[in-house]
Amino acid sequence: MIGSIDQLVNQKILLWEEERRIAARKRPQGLRPMICVSREYGARGAAMARRVAERLGFHFYSQELIHEIAEVAQVRQQLVASLDERLQDSVSEWVAGLMKRDGFSPSDYLRNLSKVVLTLARHGRGVVVGRGAHFILERKSTLRVRVVAPLETRAARIAERDGLSAAEARARIRRIDAERVAFNRRHYGADLTDSANYDLIVNSGTLGLEGATNQVVAAFESRFGRAA
Image (cartoon, rainbow, N blue to C red):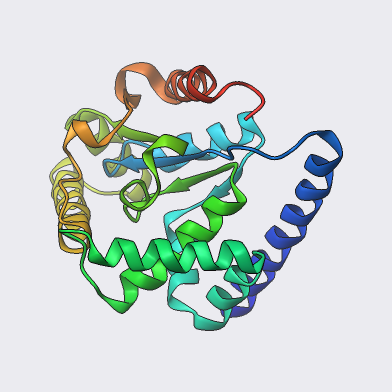
């Protein structure tokens, strides 16, 4: 697993370098906004986030990838090293500031997670799923999205996908949703379900995957422009 993550990070760094060369030829580089996606379990938030990234030509970072990079020291160091010294310093200062905020847990994992998320944000043009990334990044340069769906819609989807009964699917959804709420409360002192923490909440149960994607893309372009 470590080798595959290391290879993926290397590929991203090469892409970022090429993007910087292209941007330097076109115009001065300004704001490089990000999208953070939080989701209820079974609402297909990760699938929607991937589609949004594809539509906008952005990098896609799954919850699992973010977690693995935060856990593996050598890969995390390689990622941070992809920034120039000035931006590395800004990441260090921002992480130090985060740890002093009320509600933030000063754990080693949160420090590592924050370094990873902030480094990705300095490169910009990315969609990050989960891990409370929207509590780490600056609001002015981040579109914070929450993806929801009715419990029964999610239960039917999970039951069909994983071969569970409806009752088993509902129990799993409640457990995983509760774990995500607890993770964010423990590390950020924040309520994951509070609508005030988001710029946009989309219901994939009523809008469908394509409709939810369209809403997020439209909101991003309305706020940051098509050229962001």
